[in-house]
Image (cartoon, rainbow, N blue to C red; front, side):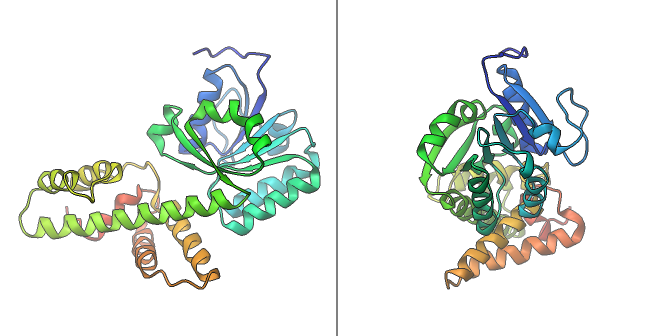
Amino acid sequence: MSSETDSSLPTVAVFGLGIIGSRCADQLLNQGYHVKTWNRTPKERADSESDPISAAEGADYLAFYLKDGIALREVFSSIQNQLKPSQTVLNHSTVDLETTKWLAEQCEEIGCSFLDAPFTGSKVAAGQGALVYYVGGDSEVLESARQVLEITSKEIKPLGPVGSATVVKIATNLISASTVQALAEALAITNAYGIQPEVLTESVASNASGSVLASMKLPTMAIGDYDTHFSLENMLKDSRFALQLAGDAGLETPGIQATSAAMEAQCKKGHAHLDFSALFKAYDTA
């Protein structure tokens, strides 16, 4: 890998330098891309711009890794009058479906290209350039943007038209949140009966309920390690998106409704910025 800029490569503007965005910007830099970054709270980076307009100016690709739909709409609205048809907007933020469709409409009016491209993968995956992108949008736009997306990912999954990736990302996060709530309850029950946490971890690994998520979260919950890979407040946000989608479709989803309420309770106790495995704090008396 090289930290020197390759003039033959496109310029990428990265908006949002949280856990994921900062690491993706680093991956692009290391592969020779000219990178411009912007974050609401300024970061000490050589590529940092003072405002969103400066970041967007001259960028071939604009990659958004923002917290939520409110932030995305605000930042995009601040730059849209300066955008040109030659630019491509890549939305990697997990937002509500309405915001995704709004963003697509704004890009269409400008004439610039757009991909609905949320990711799965947390801090470690982002640091290794191993995210998975779910992509909704025109296949030709995807092929054009593939070289940029491949730098920060291990897999790119085309899912159909704009909006499809947003819905799938919300649905998969519903599963992750509900699974961690189930793991927290299982750990609490086995702890109460004097069973060592590693016994549960090993048993789950041999069970049909075993998963990569379980192997990651059970050991850390057992020792009270809630180092943030994906925050509780962000998972709570996504659970609310799931409830909104379900409601709009006339569906009852009591599982994610209960998990959402559990996450909200822990956020109110001051645990919002911890990893979403902090759901176990409802039972952790250490």
